[in-house]
Length: 168
Image (spheres, rainbow, N blue to C red):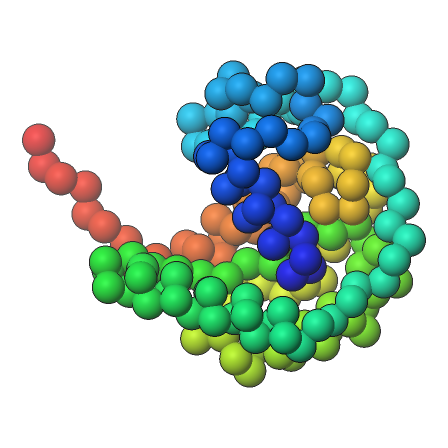
């Protein structure tokens, strides 16, 4: 959801600023990241019980407009530098997707009509069963990570121009 995206952004900014925050990770250090900047420490941890999402998704039109403005500004920044930018919906546990489908589809309709960058998937594309999540309805684990990666690669291959390798 948009709130989750905002939470991930705030968490990343707080980490970069060196500000402490609570986390399930015992010691938030560079050792928990892989070479691509992904948190991977949980890949070797036992799966945790997934917290049940009890609240519905709250749609705040003001927040949607604010987030759309930020995405548009970032898209312009990328375009100025010749970078391609795409939007992907994130993973969501299937029972939570089913319970909040009306709200999710409302958000999707809003983004489809307002985003200026290509949207490469649909919210349902990454609605996976609970066993593929680590500890929340959003946090993939195990085979779920591979499924999402393969999904993204498949969608990006059709949109990114092929580059010929440099001759040595």
